[in-house]
Each structure stands twice: as structure tokens, then as C-alpha cells.
Length: 301
Image (tube, rainbow, N blue to C red; front, side, top):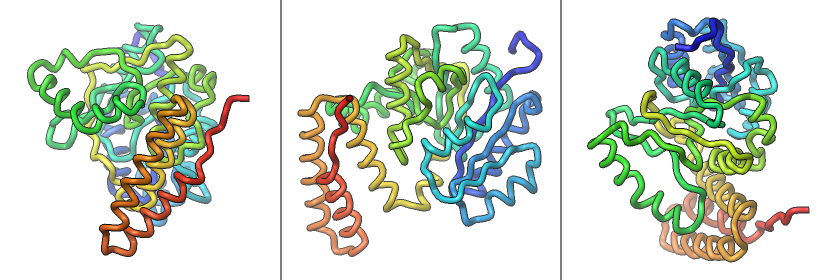
């Protein structure tokens, strides 16, 4: 365990209409013998399922920050950091199960390896299978690998030898990772132009540009009940996912890559709209296509 008596970490959880899983996540955190040493913060994105009241009633030690509207994942995390007092920040999804001692182990690794800007655990599905929670910088070819090959390949490797998953990577999922607060603030935190998705890949890229490494450790594993909050807003989630993808390409990648991606997505969702007999699906596809057409890359000043 940590060599100092009082681990200085703030655990920040963003919630949106996910009361049941949020309470389970907090329950798992408070099973940790060191839980009293951690600052627990829940930032609520204007839920209407009594999430805020439930946390206050069942976990009075948790600091709750209710936002007046759904500000998105990146913005909500930044609001949580503004209220946090920890020297380290641990970002955690609201549908996870964190074993006792996991946070301390992550902090140990980070403290003993100052070259690691971010340390993240392996993430598993509820059935114990590996959940892909890292990747390479987003480009057309790496996204194809990520979507169609990566998870099957790494699950096969994980079944053969779990220790082989220890590695430095280019980004890790926002499902769970620890970072020094001063470093997080140095890079400006999450980019609030990302409402949902890809903000973790963007953060990883900026952290590495400062010369820090992002480390995935197989010494710690958490369970992630993937997509529970997103399930409450599927149409908007798809729109925001594509908006984030387009914005990332405009921010980091070559113009030709952005142009190819835009053409592909317009063709994909145009075809989907034409084939669908569902009016809601047609509307979502139309909104995505309009968003893509209206997107303008922001060139550096």
C-alpha cells in the first residue's frame, strides 16, 4: 500500500439518470478499508430519477454537485475538479464495481513511477471478459482496427496471459484512471467541446505531448457495466459521438482525413436514413448529416 498515511485523492463520478448503478458503484467504493481517506464527489447532470437525493440519503459523506442542465461528460468532470481538494484525481464511471484496495494500488503505481502521467486499470465486463479500454491515437486506420479487430485480439491475448496487458498506451477510457491534479490542470482538463465520447482520447494525446506516459496496469481490474447512462439517451448519444469524432479529427488530424471521414459518415447515415422505415431513426440520421455538413475546422490562431 501507499507509504504515506493519508492518500490524497478525489474520486470524481459523473452521473446522468443512473441511480441504481450509481448507488452500486458508491457501495463498492465504501467497501474499501481506506474509503474514509478518499474524497468522493458525484457531479449530477440534471438527472430526473432522484439520483441526487438517493446519494445524499445513502452516502452523506459524498460531496454532491447538481448541475442545472446536462452539461456532458467533459464539462461535468471539470466542474467536479473545481470542487476537489485531492492532489490526485481518480475519474470513475457511474456504472463500475471497484474492488477494495484498487484505488490504493493505482496510486502506488503512479507514485512509484513519476513518468506515468495517467495510470489506469484493466476493465472487465460483468462476465469477466476483457473490455477494451485503451487504444492508439484516432486515425482512419486505427479506428478500423479498434472497431473490428482490437477487442477480439486483446481478449485472446488476455485469456492466454493476463500479465501481458501491462503496457504504455496512447489513451485510456474515462471509465477509470488516476492523474495528478496539477498535470490535469496544466493541460486544461477535459476539452468541454466534447459533450460525450472521445474526450479521453483527446486528453491522452495532450498528456503525452507534454512528455508523460499513459500506463495500463494488469495489477488492478475493475468491472464496468458498459453504457448504462448512455442507454437513457441513445439518439442524442449517437449524434454526440459523431460530433465528437468529427471535432477530434478537426482538432488533431490532417485535413484530408477529416474530409474522408465526413464523406464516409454522410454516405453511411444517408444510406441508413433511406433504408429505414422508422421516423425517429430517419430524424437522427438527418440531424447527424446536417451536423457534419455544418462542421468547420478551427485552425490554430
